[in-house]
Image (cartoon, rainbow, N blue to C red; front, side, top):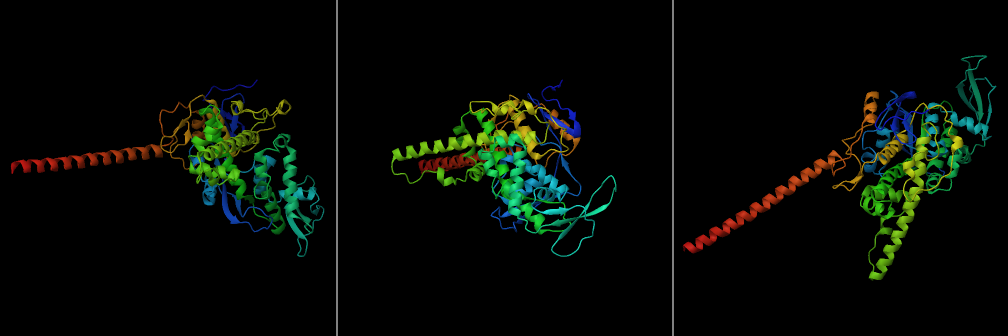
Length: 476
C-alpha cells in the first residue's frame, strides 16, 4: 500500500530523491548532473542547426537537488530564448534540457558516459561492420581501430581491440534511423507522434539533427573519443520555449478561467521575452499580429477577428503539446505511472483524453539520476495543485504564485533540498513577483514622490514670488 505524505511533507526515497508533488500520483525529483557546455559552429553539412552545444561532464561531478521557490515563474520566464549565450549560461548553471521523446536526454547522458555507445547501435543496424573477435592492435590505414576494455568472465580485465569498418557509413541515414528507432521503442511516445510538439523535434535542425551530428562525430573523430555529446542549439531553444510558455499557459488557464485568448493577450503579448518564445515555436513574426495601415474600421474588425482565430488555434496546439511534454519529462526520470499522471494538467474545458495506460503501471527501478526538466515539471504541477491563487506582477506583468528571491543557482545540498520540498507555501500577499521588482517599484515610488514634492515646491515658490510682487505693487 502506497503511503501518500501530507501536503508539504518531504520524504527521502531511493537515490536521494524527494517527493515534491503531493497529488494523486506523487512525483519524485531525483538529483541531476550539471554539465559544462560550450557553443560551437556546426562543422557538418546536413541542413541542421548552424550551432551545436558541446556537453561535457564537470570534473567535480556536481549535482543539483532542487529548484528554489518561484524558479519557473522567475528565472525560466525571464530567459531570452533568442540569446544563444543566455541559453548556454542557463544550461551551465541549472542543467541541460533536451527532447524527452525518443529518449533524447537519456542518450545524451549515455554518450557522455560511454563515447562509443552509438557505435553499438550502428553495428546492430548494419550501418557498419564490427569484428569483436579480432584482438590485434590498432593499425593505420583505411580501417579504424577503436580500443575498448571488455570485461568477460573468462578473461576479466582483458584489452580487446574492436575492428570497426566505417566504409560506406552514411551519418545522415544512421542518425535519422536511430531517432526513429528510439521513438518507436516507447508506445506512449508514438501516441503523440502526430502532435505539433513532436513535429518541432522531428527536424534536422532540432532533435533529429542532434542524432545526425553525433553520427558525424563518431564517423569523423576516429580512435579514442572524449566523454562528450553534441546537442543541437535549436533543440535546446525549442525545449526551453515550450517549458517557458507551458508554465504561463497552464497557470494562466487557472487564472483566467480556461480562456486561451486572454492568456495570450494578458500574459504573452505584453511580454517581450514570451513573445520571442512564441515566435520560435510558431514561426510568426510579431508584424503578423500587428494591425497598421488599415483604411476602414470594418477591415480592422475583420483582421482583429482573424487574429483571434489564429491565436486561439496556436494556443490550443500549444496546450495539446505541453501537457504530454510535461508528463514525458516526469515519466522518463521517475517511477512510471499512467500517461499524463498529473490530473491537474488535465483540468478545465480544454482537457483531452489521452487513453488508459493501466497496463504500464508496473514501474521499473528508480533511475539513478533525474533531470532539470523533471524538476521544472514537478514545480509546475505542485503550483497547479496547491489551491493558492495566481497573481500578475504589477510591475513586469508576469504571472506568479510565490515571490522569488534572487536565484543564481539550483540547490545542491541535501539539507537545502529537504527544506525546500518541506516548505508549506502560503498564498502570496504581495503584488510583485520578486524582490527585484519590489525594490524597483519602491524606488519608482520614491522617485515619483520626490518629483511630486519638487513640483509642489516649485509651485509654492512661484506663488510666493507672485505674492511678493503683488505686495510690492500695492506698496507703491
